[in-house]
Image 1 (cartoon, rainbow, N blue to C red):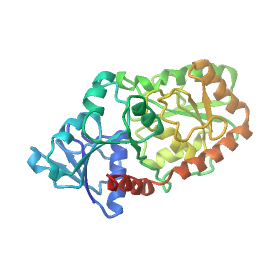
Image 2 (cartoon, helix red, strand yellow):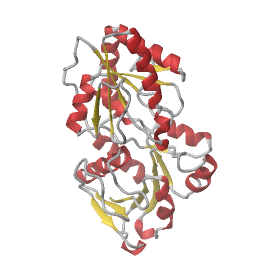
Image 3 (cartoon, rainbow, N blue to C red):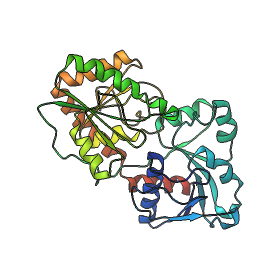
Image 4 (spheres, helix red, strand yellow):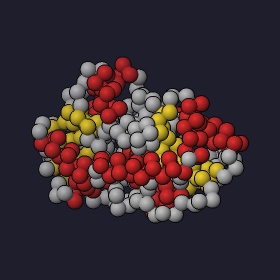
Length: 329
């Protein structure tokens, strides 16, 4: 199959969204498909190599022929539906509810009513579209089991709590402030806590952060997760939230909230694969504390959590499912 991922007016950079597109397209190439990453500017992504063909175009005539063209973000939908039939059937892989770009009424008008096959990366996005009367199929990106895995290096002298760091208006929904508020409270109660974060945007100025890694490599990120006993994720506006799932692959237990767009409904079940607090900072802190005081609970949820992510499948397995979904259209 010939597939185009449309990056026009979006581009590729060193961020989680671009990483998913690159790794997904690489997996599709490994499966024998021809994949084009069609763009208007040069590639700014450097985290891993590209196996797909990155094609910078000046006009629509330069877009290759394909069986499917997939919009990768809201800004790529208009060009996707405008391309001629030779560029393939039109699809949109929704991986976030991009309310920082458009109001909900505009998302419905310009994105959901666009004539595209709707693929979503998570249960939460499928529910969101369903609540607005739009059908979709779940196409998860999958995980790199050979890169994120247990190293058995966790300290028994201190409890390390990890979190993702983000700053700026666009990232406000990550609720990084909840992490700082929780750690500030818990460090007053527990003397054996260490707090660490990683991120690609900004550097935390809080004295609560004992360790910060800027844009870690895959190897560094795996080591980082393996140092953590608990991963905290209060985010409230996600498609499929990747860092908690990666932490779970290393047998680190996770605390999230029951916000309907937390991006973790696919894998985080309360007291089964992790802990899910109510959508308040008080409940969030209470659940983190429950893991701090119980080593047995941490290890049990960490082990079962890893099995849950393994069940969701590797990147290649999930790309095979995506091809199956497209083939049925």
